[in-house]
View 1: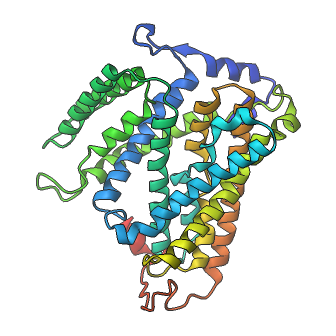
View 2: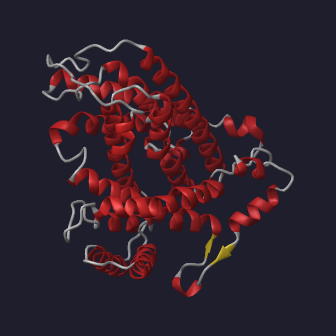
Length: 394
C-alpha cells in the first residue's frame, strides 16, 4: 500500500529514482539497482525458508507419503497448468502476442498469505484442510522454482554455476555439523548467492538449494530438527524484512504517468492474469481433484469434502510474491506490460483472498458429515484449525 501511494503521489519521481538507484561492486557484476537487490538478493532469504520447508515436507512432512500427498500434488499441477493455458488463450485472442512471455505469472501461489487467510477465517475446520493447502502450495512453489530456473535463464556460465554448487555443499556440510556457526553460514550463503548470480541462473535458486541441505530429522542427539530450527531463526528476517522490502520495490505501479488507470488496466495482460489466478486456479484445482478421485484409487484425506476445496482453490489464487517476481523476469522492471501485470497481480490476489475468506466462513457454518471424503470409512476428526492443541503443534 505504501508503494502504491508513493508511486502515484506528487513525489512519484522520488520513488522511481529510489528504485533505480544502483549500488554494489561493478567488478563482481553486482552493481545493481535497489529494485534488483530486492528481487535477486532479499528474495534469496525468502526462498531459503521455502527450501527448508520443502525439505521438511519431503522427508518428514505431508509429502513423505505419495499416497497421502497424491491428490494435493496433482491438484497443484492442474492449478498451475490451467492458469497458464487461460493466460495464453486470452493474450492470443485479444491480439497481444508480445505478452506471451509472461505465461507463468498466474501459476504461483503465495504460501504465507494463503495460510494466513485460512488461519483467520477457517477456524473450526479440520486441520487436514490446512495440510492439503500447505501441500498444494509447497508443490506449487517447487514447480515455480523449476519454471524460473528453466524458462527465465537466458545464458549459463557453468564455471560460476559449478563454483556456486561447491559453496552450497560447504554450506550444507557446516549446517549439518555438530555446532554450526551463523558467522560462517552467512558468508557462505552470500558467496553461493553471488556466484549463482554471476552464473546467469536466477540467484534465488541458491537460497532454495541451501535450504535443501538442512537436515530434516534430528541429528547429533538433538530433539528438534534442524529444518524447524533454521526456519524459526530465519523466518522473522524473511517475513519481517525481505518480503516487505521486496513488495515495496515491486508493487509500486504508477497509474498516473503510465497512460492512466484505464489504459493500464485495459491491457489484455490484466484480464489474462486476473482470470488466470482467480478462475484458472479454481478450475485447475477443482477439476484436477475431481478427475483424480474419479479415475484413480487416490482419495481426499479424512475430514475433507469436495466443498472444502472451493475456498482452498480460491486461496491458491493469491499469487503476490512469486507472481511479482516472475512479472519482472518476464518483462523487465519498468515496461508497459510490467505495470499492467503488477496491477493485475495485486487485484487478483485481493479478489482471491476475499473470495477465499468468504467461502471459508460459509464452509465453517455448514454441517459436517461423518465421512466427508466418501471413502466409506469414518473420518474420526479430532483436531481443528484454531484449537489450542493445534496452535502448539504448528
